Amino acid sequence: WRESYIGYKRFKRLLKRLPTAQSSGSFSPTASLSLREPSELEAPLLSGPYAEVEALFFAALDDDLRRVNEVSVAETESIETSVALATGGEALLSQEEVAALYCRLAKLRSFMSLNATAVKKILKKFDKNMAGTGREPQLPSVMKRLEAEPFSVCRRRADGMAVELERAMPPDKVPRLRQLAQDALKRAGGGRESRPNVLPLALSLAAGLVVALAPLEAFEQADRPEAQRCLGVLVATVGLWLSEAVPFFATALLVPVLAVASGAVPPKLVHKTGELEQAPDIAKRVLNSMFNAVILLVLSSLVAARVVARCQLELRLAAALQERLRKQPRPFPLAGVM
Image 1 (tube, rainbow, N blue to C red):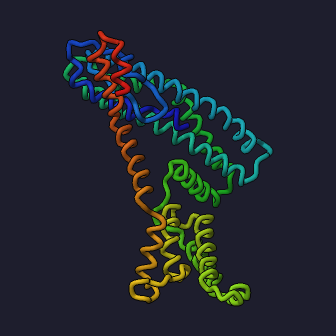
Image 2 (image 1 turned 90 degrees about the horizontal axis):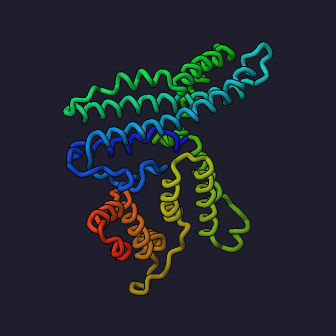
Image 3 (image 1 turned 120 degrees about the vertical axis):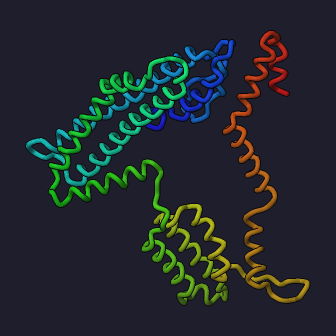
C-alpha cells in the first residue's frame, strides 16, 4: 500500500511556500509540473495567494483520502470474510491460519492509524502557517469529518475483529499472537534489529571453519590448502546470506576479511624483495580487486544523480526557464537541451 499513504512530505513542501504566497503573482498548479506522483519527489511549487494554496492543499488531501478509503474498505471486507470462518460456530481455520490473519489485520490497522495521524499532524502545520491570515483553524472541522470517513469506520471494525481473533485463540497463545503481529509490522516497515542473530551467525562461521580445516582427501592430494579454505569461506558466506544473521551488506563486507584471515588467498612473490607477501599486502591486493577508479566513477555518478533529484535541481531549472521564456516558447526546447 505504499502508493496509498497520505503524502505527508509533499504537504510539508507545499506549506513551506505559504510565507511567500502573498505575492501579487498568480499560483498555477500546472506550473508545478506535477501535483501527485507515486514517488516522494515532487516539482517545486511556485508562490501564489494563500487562497489558491489552500485550495490546492485540500484538493490533494481529498485525493489522498479517497485512495486511503479505497484500500481500507477493500481490505477490511476481505479480512471480515476470513474472520467469520475463524470465529464461527465451527472454526474452519487452523491456529497458524488465524495467526497469519491476525498479522494481516495488524498491518491494516497500522495503515489506517498512520494515515489518521498524518492528517492530524499536517493539519496542525497548516493551521499554524495560516494563523496570520484571519482564517478559522481547519483541524476541528476536518477531524470531525475524518471520523465519518470510510477508513475510520473500517478502523473501528478492524479493532473489533482483532478482539474476536484473540478470543478464538487459547488464552496462553494470545501474547505470542501479539508478538507475531509486532514482528510482521517491523518487517513490513523495513525495520530490523541492528544486533545480529547470534545462533545462525555462529553456525554459519562454524560450518565454514569445519569445511576449511576438515581433512578432505581431494584437496590433500592436490596439495591446495588455499582451495579448501576458499570453499570454507564460501560455505560461511552462503550460510550468512541464507540465514540473514547479519544484513546483506555486512555479509558482503565480511568476504574479503574472511578470505584474508583464513589464508584462502595464496601469497604472491614480491619482485623487489624476493619474499612472499604478508597478510597486509594480501589484504591490499584483495581490496584493490574489489574497488578501483572505474567503480568509484560509477558510484560517484549515481550519488550525484541522486543529489540532483533529491534537491529537484532539474525541476527548479525548468521552472526558471519557463518563467523567463514564457513569451518566447521556441527557444525553450533549445534552452532545455543546453
